Length: 106
Image (cartoon, rainbow, N blue to C red; front, side):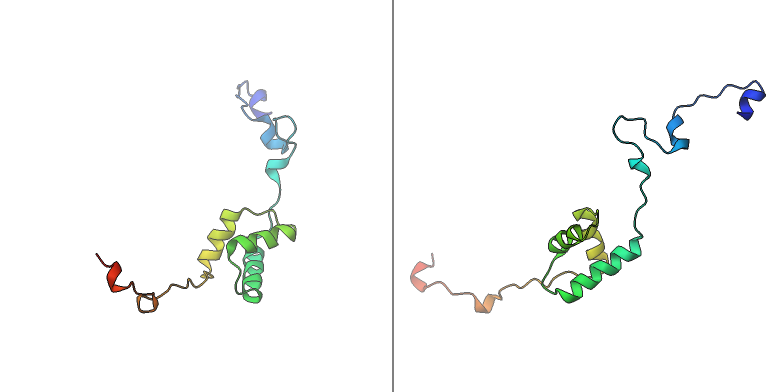
């Protein structure tokens, strides 16, 4: 309004930005939704991982969704990895593999 008083013209490309309402039909103020703090999510992921030791990030994501968290699986994976909560991958050692019989060797 100050610009109009001084005879200046302003190009307003996003008038809805100041009001907090989306100009797209059917979306309302979806883009301005408040997120829960990241620290709270980190704490909850760590709690689940400590009580359910065998759960990976996918299962933790399912539990978070059931609790009402609107969180993406990729975000859970990133936080899970940053906190160092990766599951131990069990691999069979070469010594324990079943050896092929001599007649099968080429």
